[in-house]
Image (tube, rainbow, N blue to C red; front, side, top):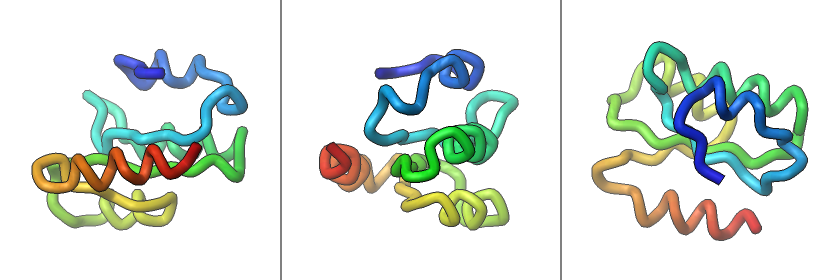
Length: 86
């Protein structure tokens, strides 16, 4: 399932997905905020992030949920992670 916005993703029932691969920054919103919402509804849900941003406070927050992959150089690793969550 692919969601075009955080608002759309918030409508998804976490029990219907096996993992979440989120962008670290989604427009005006932070992917970590959505991760928090997902984790509160589904504590065991695997969560990872894609980002083009460098390391920083938001990056470290994301790492508390799961792996963080660089969009430019780690797309294959992110796909491998996602496929391994089935």
